[in-house]
Length: 279
Image (cartoon, rainbow, N blue to C red; front, side):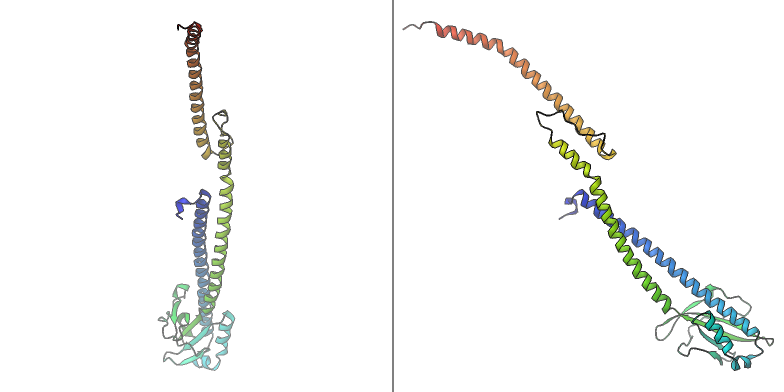
């Protein structure tokens, strides 16, 4: 069945459903993107705060050997700020501190100079061999009074964020579908109730016959959209009733005009018939 053959209620209900799905889809995508951006910004800010704290700890460290001998100071700093992976290397790329051997950090960007304050925009994506996504920031830090620079690489897995977003995405999709269905259903009910006036007009129109033309549609109680239709239909009834009245008057006048000649003809016929006929 073509859409044009559907009832007006069904067409408007389908239109409500389409609009609801579109609006909820756009709203869901916006909310998802906003949440993803906010969570990503929060995680990147945590990375920056942690690397600034590690820089501060390095400034309070006597020399590079102290880093090697007391790595717990840096590991505790990482644990305080979150589940981060830390790698501190000397200039010769000697590993001084490392708490996660499964990450290579080979795709990390060039380190931020020690004189530059890290920002969330310095955080980059890094894909590992196991296809795990990392958010990585790399910066140089000065050790104590010696001023020796070491490379600090700090990373955080994006799997946790991806899991949170996947759960949220599923909830948004479910909520969007439920909202669209409810909106479409309520729209269908509202349209059906709104078009009840059309059925009322149809009932009033069925009472109109050739002998009962004085009935008119109640245009005053009709909505503005249907009032024009009701007024036009009432005008048609007025013209029809006026035409029928004129026709009735013409028929009455015609009958009156024909009555006298017919009576005379009948009298003459009776007189002729009453006379004796010749044999």
